[in-house]
Image 1 (cartoon, helix red, strand yellow):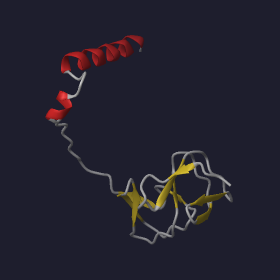
Image 2 (cartoon, rainbow, N blue to C red):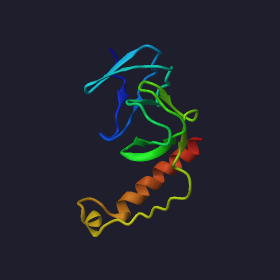
Image 3 (cartoon, rainbow, N blue to C red):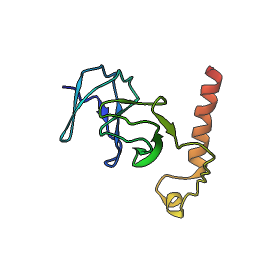
Image 4 (cartoon, rainbow, N blue to C red):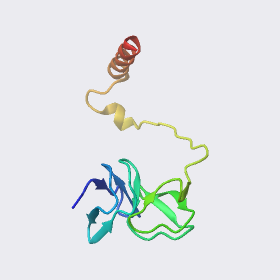
Length: 126
């Protein structure tokens, strides 16, 4: 019995292997018994339910890809059976709240110089 995997969100239809999973190994997740169908390298995805062609693949509770063929429970989920939905430009803007600046010990004068020193030390060592 192996438990070297993680489900990142309760709505996910995949698990992420935390260790290499070999063909024939059995995973137990909640009420599911999953037989590993393909070798799955650590960090890769495994289906926890049958996934039909065209169905979204959910990781972090969000669609990260779409199945391009039927995927069986226990199969490796990767570029051979899915396409990504993570393409395109995503914009992100950091806008700290006033409360962040009011937190005890936080100030741009104390935080940023320390961070700059760490970055400079790393650059010097490279």
